[in-house]
Image (cartoon, rainbow, N blue to C red; front, side, top):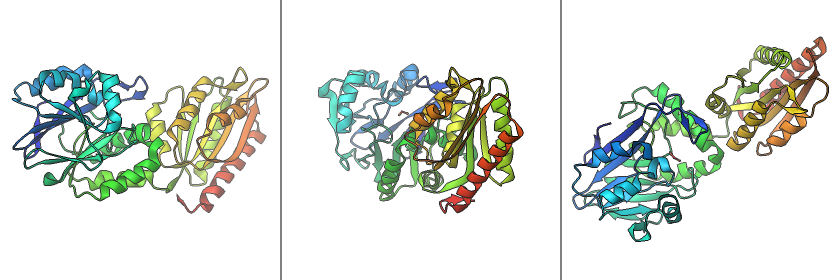
Length: 394
Ligand code: FEO
């Protein structure tokens, strides 16, 4: 995508990966993504902030082709989707210095092979004067790697946030135009990438609050020219508030667990609880992650495979454990043919979730009227817990 000026002397160079559908061989990208680099031109020096994924290196290098000089290349984050083309940029501009946080120094050496003499590390709050534009580096560790930092240009009230506030969204838009679409993509991004670091993000949001900016330029997705929109969203996602919602991933082999799931979904809905149900045989795992951002309760349903949970449930439970959502309550249900340790094994998969277990229902073979009564009792327990919890918005 051609370079576009977002502030006088600041250009947005988005390389848009329209066709990418999986990130890190793990994260679904239903709407593609972009890797954004920014050129910041002062009267004395020019800096490039971040680069692009190596697969699109030719697009970034083409945009820089006519650039007469580059003094600095700022690596805000060493993950290769932003830093992977830095060696090519440094080769094209042999006088340029790579700027990164001290923790990134070893990473750009080991991950990218950048020679030590090309690297300048910057401390938290340190500045580089480009002439009329000052780059101030703001360390934001664990958002989402230990070395990550943002860059602030006070003269233009502009914050370059890298992954922070980013959205996996392939678009020709320079600025956010469709808030609902960007909100969904940014929430997916938060859920899959940032949620495990919720408490750290709270601290980093407070740190950014001290800066005066009216533009957030992330390294994925469009630029926020009204940053209150995404700041409010992040504050909501990291807040201790929960919603009167249940996330219910399940899978079924011969129909018993599915019947139990459908009965429980109906029982919960009758009690005014919103249920996000996911048949794991056909689920976009990113949608499941999004639902986990706000929900108060996680309920997992599984048939038994060789005594334990179905492998798809094993994967989903492991993923939920890694993402560390703020759920406070949990329950497990399922079915089996002759014996089962599925409930114990699922419970063992989610040690990171500090949840109160509200009940378990395990059925041999087809659900009976008594099974349905047990599921109704479980729905009652969920409703009681939600109604009594002041952190849950009902
Ligand atoms: Fe967009 Fe953590 O890389």
